Image (cartoon, rainbow, N blue to C red; front, side):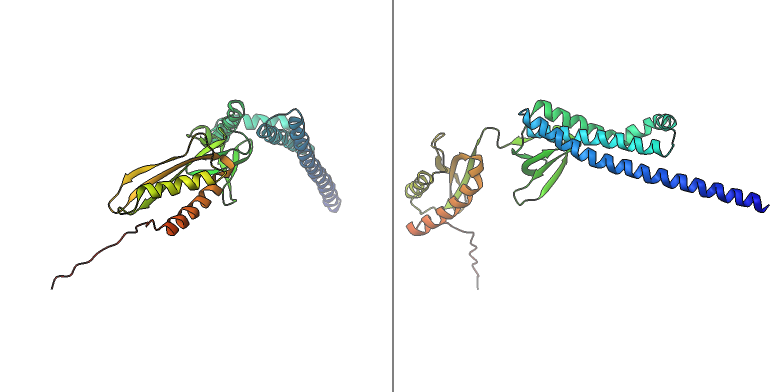
Length: 271
């Protein structure tokens, strides 16, 4: 009886040693595959850039290469554990229908990513607006696109959201129109106020001469006359021009006595 227990213990110990060795080797294989995947992704991105490919394509290809190398590393690690790969694939195939429902969102994002790369509705560095988000395109991955907002936040958007929504590209034409409006009092000299806006537009080098700036009366409100100011500028100068013009108009109106009315409420009390 003692001999049987000793043999059983020896067998168990030998099995644990064998399993531990396989686990260690499988972990080493996967770790090496992980490092190789990162290296392959960098090389793929570099190769696409050297071929003068779009940076978005380079990022997408790099992420695909990384995913494929990781998949091969995972299969090799599983094989090292002496798991029957054929049986595993058959089991996965049997569960394919359920998996397809679970992964249909990811598959849709992948197909949308490929569609973006082929149709090229935008490129790296473009400023986009869609679905309530605005930002500069940083990169496109297999399943999502990354935007950087004006306040330096990262917005990660599923690719299917982009292809399924209306996307406004502010950068594709290189220029952008800045629409401003200012309310002046009804007793103000409109011609003088318009002349101030024209002068400010002509003095700022960021304002493009063609198309010409538009300065006009836009609306007659209850307590003010709205002057509209439409200026064209380079995309990269849009926000700098916006903030500079707001300050310049206020200072110029103050210096010339053009009054900007604000809401007031007169209360009359009967005795």
